[in-house]
Length: 276
Image (cartoon, rainbow, N blue to C red; front, side, top):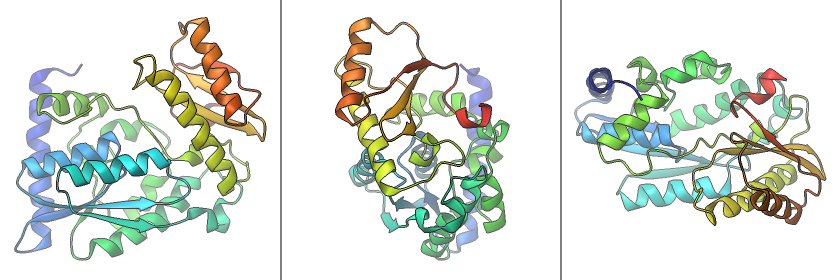
């Protein structure tokens, strides 16, 4: 865990960045946040509201977003009285995304954040990119720079471990929330992306999630990686899953349409297709 003094310093820096960014909106300080319902964007909203700022959450809904994530995002905002605008966008219509190129995230974020910037009106648009993201292959960051999107967490030097620690210390719900990147990341570069394939992976991950939740492993990290119409690999980070759990996972994936579903233990789930 990060040291307490260091986290406190970064929290203070973040507060200053948020206030300075919000001041750009005019008489009533406020920001618009690109909000997925994930840990980073929730944390950004949480900290902006702690700073006394008006926050508008802007949420994209499309076939690339897991259904559970969309539902969670809407409910979390409603429970806390956060103004929320839901914008429908389907990046699968982009010719550049048809065969899942390596710079997919750049093209996807260009269309999505262009829509978010329009919805933000006169408010500065911020996103939850954090300092840990800067060490990974993230072609989407170029789109954010081109569109003038601010990333206060990254600017404050706040990484994922800081987020979890500060979130827990300041009473934000579910600071251990597992990362949930968009469904396009479940496909290898060059794979054809279709709504049906994305829906199949989403259903498979929901089935896996139910198996883990029934055993008290609600935040167990995993990914279902699409290989073909009948085969998907289940990537997990722990190699000590009991045989009965592995059997239940195989049954769940078969029920979702993937009769071939090897379980592979990975050191890291993020960026898998950048390493193979």
